[in-house]
Structures are given as C-alpha cells and as structure tokens.
Image (cartoon, rainbow, N blue to C red; front, side):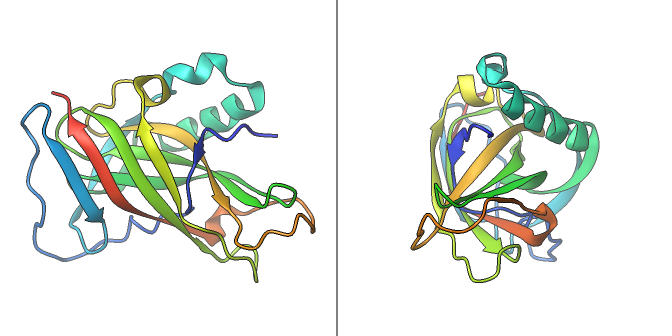
Length: 198
C-alpha cells in the first residue's frame, strides 16, 4: 500500500486547460511577500519546460511510495507542460487507488511552481472531479504548509511528486479496493498560499 504524504481532495489536471483571458496576476519578486490566490480558474497559462525533483523525504519513505514518485518524475521531468502563470499547477500522475476500508481515493500528482521565484510555506486546497468510480463522492482536502523536507527548495518551474488522498463522503468501509485509471480524474486547486523566498 502506498503511504499517503498529503491529505488533499482532488485528482486530475483541471488546471491545465488553455484560456484566453487577460493577465490577472503579477510577477512576484519581493522576498517574504505573502501570496494568496483564490483559484486558477480562468487564469492565463503558458507552456513551460519543467524539472521534476524527488522530495528530500524520498530517502525515508517506503519502496512502494518511492516507486510511484519515480514514475511520475519520469513522466513529467524535462517535458513541456501547460502551467498557470504565477501560481501552482497540479498535474495528475499515473497512480490511482480506491481504498474501501479507509474510504479514500488516493492518486499521485506533481505540484509545479509556476511563479518567477522560489517559494516556501505552500498550502492549498484541492477538489476532485471523479469520473472513475460512479456513485462515489469525495470531499475537498487541504494541504497544510508544506515544509522543505516535503518539497525541498521549490524553485521556479520545478515540480515535486506527491500522493493525494481524497476522503470519501459517507464512507461505509464496504466495497472493493481497486486501481483507478487517473485519466478519469481531474484535480482542481484553490486557496493557494505561499511566501516568496528569493
């Protein structure tokens, strides 16, 4: 079983749809400045070459979780991806699993720093659009401020693999555990907060 490193609600790449809206965010340059972004919906995006790094905690996690991280790193590292300007983008990974006992949908993802500066104290909320398990509803989840141990030095246009767990609404503990095709899942990110580091 994969160890869940973050409890979040949402899985998918809902933030990677191209939009033709006016620039709504400004470049962040002041160190220590706190940034709050309500949502990425309708925000301008651009295609960017990204680098994905394993988090510093990778040397301490179990082999199954490390394997998931490495697969997502291989999938997205040194690729061009559509990311939201001056914000955080979530790209869905290949791992998806429904755990009936815990009542959660777990999926891997890569979080991308789309700001023009390194950031710290990142927190956000995610919601999932579930087309993988009909009839199941999953709640939003929140990531508390992520530490350097969890995401390392979060530099511009760098991504870090994570596993997100979405708690099931009205979980019964019954049913069957099963692998999920993450192509049927979309993650929406909101309430993004971080501090500019340098």
